[in-house]
Length: 442
Image (cartoon, rainbow, N blue to C red; front, side, top):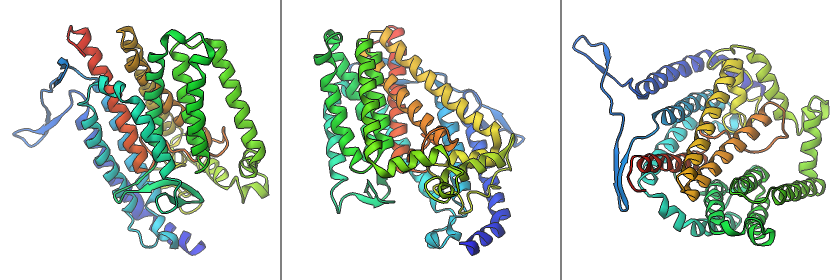
């Protein structure tokens, strides 16, 4: 391992220059996509602004006219994706120096990540063409598909085991993670459920228990993988949608208390998770620092080295085989080391703006009497907010270590795929909102 680290240190200047070159290319591409800033070469060869359409039309059965989309929303998503591409490359470029990854090229994870974004973009554009009424009609069916996938991944020969967890179904171009699909399916199903149970919101048995049973089944399947982080996110989505849908507040807090009690029991009777909690409480203890808190201590070292403005792109030392999963669960730590506090705050600000905008789109849909669309959009906001908060909290040592990626940015094909599909659905909600406000039909 020390030989691999020395080799990686020797290759650091070249890796740093490659990362900076990629950052220059990506930043130029992102700027060219910003609203009103598309560029083309003029007669003198210099780039100059071109007129950009500020609206577009979609035509589909039952939709008279769809005009306009939120360009700032798309720009923020593209910016987060672009930064994710650069940082995934930076965090993974030295991995081939480790014998475990010796058969991979330096650009292996970058190429896979870009391919995943390409596939996800095509899927998102296809989803954007489908009216929300179709998703509302089939929300229950999609939830059943999610349950079937969660069962299939547990079957030996179908599910793939990585780091003692059986969470992935190999599909050739990517390893699909059913729990990512389950997050979106839960947001849809919970929204559809609240629309159907609107008249029973004050009745605990009629309003809560069927949904609680659905969450329990999903939770049992996820804990068999095991994937506690995904279960927490899915439970948060379902509870959040119930609360926003108008379930009696006393019932909501009762459900929350029951969920917390269940998590406490799981931790109490699971030695592995209990050990992680204890290590998180005292990560610098020598036994913990070389054991269950190893990732956390090196993540904190990365943030400490980054300071205010960071060490510079490609200059992270912790990614050189010290910090495990630097390109997935701990990508924010690499951002903190290379871009400093400024870079971390930019990422947090981007997610804050995006989530706030999604909530406002959902609120607008509900005001237009489109309850399913509004609650589903707000469920997506809860999903992104909860997962981003947990990932950032884990990286910063605020929360115990959990295997959750940073949405839109961390390496992971199925995560990127479902993130972009979910955001395409939110964008569709916004487009239909605009059509209604212009006097059209959604």
